[in-house]
Each structure stands twice: as structure tokens, then as C-alpha cells.
Image 1 (cartoon, rainbow, N blue to C red):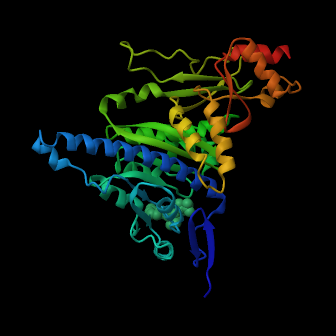
Image 2 (tube, rainbow, N blue to C red):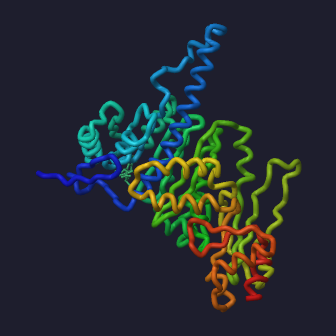
Image 3 (tube, rainbow, N blue to C red):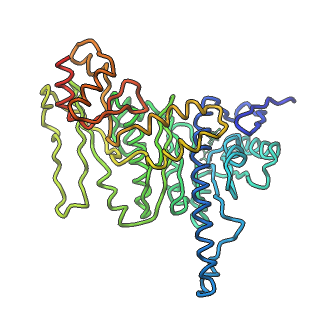
Length: 415
Ligand code: SAM
């Protein structure tokens, strides 16, 4: 029978099996991943070439070095797409990312794997991509001795069950890409379910999209920590109905311990929705600091109501701005279907202050039952008061600022 074909990026996908997943809405996700991985692969390649040159310079001095001398043709990266469905993503990675040596496109469903195989053949990518039919968790555990530079997790819903094995099969300094689509759970509709799935209590908040990113990052960091590994987020994005994070994974017990200082609880007043973040403690300081935020039974200092408590959330940086800089530059000459949107999102992210969470202008004004001033006026009021202010890419009405909540309420009340 005739099969439909879908063209996305440089891949052409045969869709013969109705039950094999293809989601056109995720083109942005795949485009962004191609962009991030292209930059990551190029940097890794340069690093590897430097290492190779160094080794060959010294090889006459130290015979032992020849044992670890890397294969000259293998300076590119290896990628595991653990949940591949049609193979589309892997084929795009293979065709569009320079410096890739090896890709494994895995799926648990035999129909999916049939489709992956057909698509690899149809796109003439057999030299680079291997189809694999296994439960992703088992395959990732088995790959702990033969790690991948990049592991991509793009599940339906929640990625939790894949994280324990995923954090172990990423190489040191490698990149883990994780999608989560269960936004209702992450965004506070079911705090208990969120705790069960992500080890953190979510709260209903106007800042829910960034909270979702920070809950997921906290969860990945917790998994990594169990194996003496720590994470460094390169880019964290919330768009449409899902979130996507790009984090590097490193090995190092000492830095792992510092993880605690990147975690905090969120207190949100049930009345005026003022937020306070309570860091979980700092291992940097000699004496373990006692919490200085509102204790559970302390009332909100603005409206004397109680607090909802959520977390723990990741309160460290969610983007690496120097990576984002380079990414903005490098996407300029890439051919991507959603390039315009990628540039738009990256430019807002580039301006984002490295301060957790944000308030939402119309919500602030509706709490005090006042008309909403223009965003530009509100922002200049904060700037004139000597504070920094930016948007969060997750919300057009967001106000991210280093101003204390008191100052925000002063401005709101004065309006
Ligand atoms: N990454 C794909 C893309 O961009 O087009 C879409 C992946 S789809 C959302 C999720 C896939 O995960 C499905 O094909 C499903 O069969 C597969 N899957 C679910 N559980 C799995 C498991 N334990 N191991 C491997 N694959 C699994």
C-alpha cells in the first residue's frame, strides 16, 4: 500500500503504521535539539582534536599514552535516542549535525522499530544509525560501560522512570536532553502526584512553567547525585504544552555535595500570592545555615494569610548564558523550519535574569483589584527604583526582578 511521507528538516519519514507516533507540533523541539546538538558536537570535536594533538605531541615521551590514543576518525559524538518512535529525530540528527560518529535509535515497540528500520534505509543512513529494539531502561543500564555523549529522552508524559539509567549512561561532560509533557502534574493540578513522580511538591502559581522546569531539573540532579554525578543546565525551555531541558552531566563527588545549595522550597501566600524562596542550606558555610524564610505557621507579612509550600526546586541557573550566546550566533545560518520562533525564544532567554521565578503583571493588579498598567511603565518603575527586571520566556506578562516583594507591592499600590 502507498505510504504517506513527511518531510521535516533533511529527513523524509514514511508513515505506514498508524500507531507509530509522529507529532508535527514537536518540530520546534526537534529543531531546537538539532541546533543545540550541532553546537555541542562542534565544541566536543574541537576539544577532542586538541586532546588528540596533545597526546600525539607527548606520545614519544610516554609510551603509556599510546594506549589511550583516540581513534583519529572517531572525534565526533555518539547519540542515543532512547524513545525513538519513527526514527525521525535520529535521522535528522544524523543528517543535520556535523561531527556525529554513531546514533542508536531505540524503541520498545516492534512496530516502531520496523518503522525506524524502514526510515533509516529510506534516508540511506545505515552507516550512522542503528535501530535497537529494547526497553530503554535496560538498554541504558547495559550501556553504562559504553556510554553515549548524548542521551535524548522524549517520552509520552513523565520521563522519571528513564532517569535512573539515563544519568548513568551519559559520558562525563555529556549531554542529557529531557522532555516532559505532563504539564498538569508539574503545574500544580496535583501536588501529590507531582511528589510521587518528581520527588517535589508542585504548587498552583502564575510562575508554574518555570516551576515545572525547576522541578524537573531538581529531579534529574537528584538521580545524578546517587551516582556521584552532578548537572549543569545549558538551556531550559517551556513552550506549548511541554518542557525541554538540556543538561550536561559530570562526575565529581565534591560538586555533587554542593547540589544542596542549588535547592530550595517555595512559599506562596494563599492570599496575595507573594512568593519566598527558602534555600535548603549551604554546604559552603561552616555552620549549616538555619532556614530564614517563613516557617510553616508564620503568616504572610503582606496580608496575614498562610502559605502553600512547594518544592524542592532547582534554584541554580537554568541556562548557561555563554552557551546561549553561542547558540544564538550559530542558529543564524541554520536551515530550520521553526527558526524564527527559535530565535525569538532564545533572545528572550538571553535577557532572562538569573533569579528564580517571577510575578505576572495582570495577576498582581487583579489581586489588588486595579487596572493593569502597561508592562513598559511597570518595568520602568522597577528600573527607576534601582532594580533589575526582565521577562521569563515562559510568560509574556512575567516580571522577573531582584526587587524584594515589598518593593513590588509598593509600586502596585502606588498605581
Ligand atoms: N522522539 C520521538 C519524536 O521526536 O518523534 C517521539 C517519541 S514518542 C513520544 C515515545 C516513544 O517511546 C513511543 O514510540 C513508545 O513506543 C516508546 N517507549 C515507551 N516506553 C518505552 C520504553 N520503556 N523503552 C523504549 N521505548 C519506549
